[in-house]
Image 1 (tube, rainbow, N blue to C red):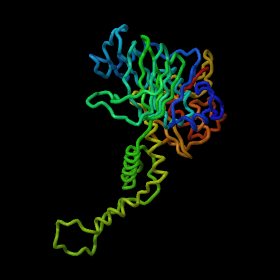
Image 2: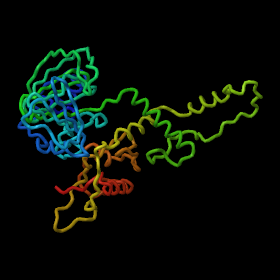
Image 3: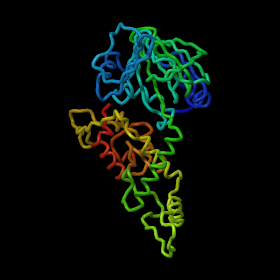
Image 4: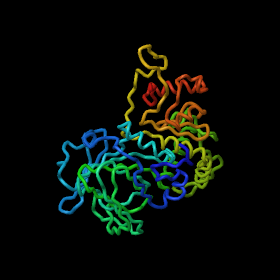
Length: 398
């Protein structure tokens, strides 16, 4: 994706202009971000997904003026003509190719930040109440109309005792009615309230992950702990990768010359010093962060189930079928790289991030199935075959 090419979905802004001016700063309303827009899934299919065990869904409604919420799967949904209810289906991109393709149009933001595509289906008056998100979100109107009221107020106090996070004092500053194809971008902590104006009102939310400092710090500590175990004698780290370079940590504590003590319950000073010296051998640096983030950020969504496809074989070019034209990552596969390191579905890849594999990660497909044409090393070809067998990658005919 060319960051300097104007995009209709950004109202004619280039991705660079959007990121510099609006991203994490202020809202943006784009009329007809998608012209003649049709939602990736129908209302009927969305309701069916809400009944499935493997799909994360929620139902929100009001009863006697009180907000209520229940989690799916649902054996029964409210009547289509009953007002004031919303069905929210999470991670639709994990279950539908068209939804995944729609979400991929927002990859001018790094994949490390892109989270999922959620769809809400509401009857007239339905919504989830005034609230704020801790992450960036694009709200794309799929069908029907929805009225949005937004505010960048500083008071984000929530009503206590509710299963939903509803703002106690919502003071709208702007109001918009979105038609199909219209889109509203909101930065983190922008207060907003959306109310359906029609039955079968569908809104598509493209959300982004925003780990807090506690999550990053905890992850780094866990990664360090795993490396400590690896350096203490295991052949590899937690993801099958070799331990990070550095000193081993399998030497035993020694205290030759320790004097006899009159206070046996007191922790020896030498043991305190040894503990401090040991932990100082672990370097909290970019290398450790790279491995932690690469594996964590590519960990498959909990809804991801990969299907092995026995027909995906590189030597299966039948005369009665069109030849394979390219490799394509499964919609559920997550793949990132940094420098020579390559990460896929929560693992450190067994090969370096050579140019052909970087192209696969960036474009999510690799034209041509001839490894020689892509200048792939034998190790990369072997990795592609393994991913093909695991269902992480597919051979496609166009």
